[in-house]
Length: 347
Image (cartoon, rainbow, N blue to C red):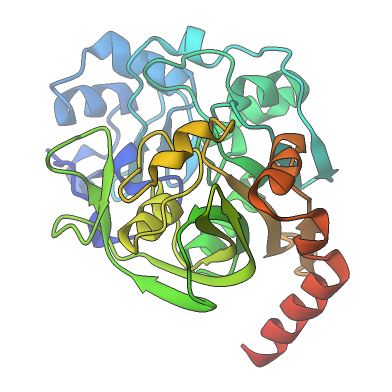
C-alpha cells in the first residue's frame, strides 16, 4: 500500500503545499480501480467521501482529473485535495460578478474584489471565486480546482490568473514552481519603513495559534519577499508607508507575516497586529491594505511575456488622503512596464 508522503519533498507554490495529499501508486496495484486504491491508502476517509472527491475533480492522477473506475497501471502520481463537506455543495456554479481583465483559450486573468474567498473551505463553502468561475466558464469543471493555480486572501484585492486547459495549468504551475511569475503588491504599513529591503524568513503555522501563520518557524517553509518604499505618510502623527512588495515565493499570508515580523503591520489587518499604534482604532479602514496590482507570466501557448496592471479599488483610493497620500503616489503603468522589461532582460 502506498502511504501519503509530505509535499515538502517537492516544494512548490501551487496553492499551498498543506492543501493536498500526495500518493504514489506502486506497481503492484496495476489493474486496480482508483477508488479501491484510495480506500486502502486513505483509511481515515470513508469510501463514499473519496468517491465524491473523485467525481468532483478533487483527485488527480498524473495531473489529470479522472473517473472513479479508472484503472491504475502503477507508478502514477496521485493528488487528493481533501474537502470537509460534500463537493456537490462546494463545487456548485454560482452567478457571482467577476471582473475579467483578460481571457483567451488558455488563461483567464481576474481582478478579484476584496471579500471574495478564492476556494471553498470551512466556513466558506459557497459564494467563492471557484463557484463563480464554474458558472462563467463551465468547462473548468474538468480541471483540478477549476483551473485555479494560486490564490489571494479573502480580503486582499487584485490580479490572479486561472488556467483554462490542462496544458495551461501545467505550464502555470511550473512557472510558479520556478518562481518566474511576477506578482507585485501595494501594501500600506504602519511605521517608518526603509527605502527597500528583502525578508528571508520561513513561514509556517503559528504553534500557539493554528489559525495564524508565523515568520521564522522551525516547521515553516522558505519564503522571500522584496519590498521598496514608494511613498511616506502619517495618521494622527503615526508614521506609515506605502510599499511595493514582490513575491519570490507564495506562502499563506506571506506579505502580512513578513512585514509584521519587521515591525510594519499592514493597515487594517485584523490578525497580524503587533506594533500597530493605538491610533489605528480611529482609522476607518477594516481590511488589510493589500492589493495585487501587477501580474507577469509567460503565456502557456505563445510563450509571450504578458503583464497586467490594475490600480487599487475605491476603498484604497479613498484611504490615500486620510494617510497623507494622493493618487500621484501610486505606481504608473508605463514606468512599471519599463521596469519589468528591464528586469527580464537582466535576469
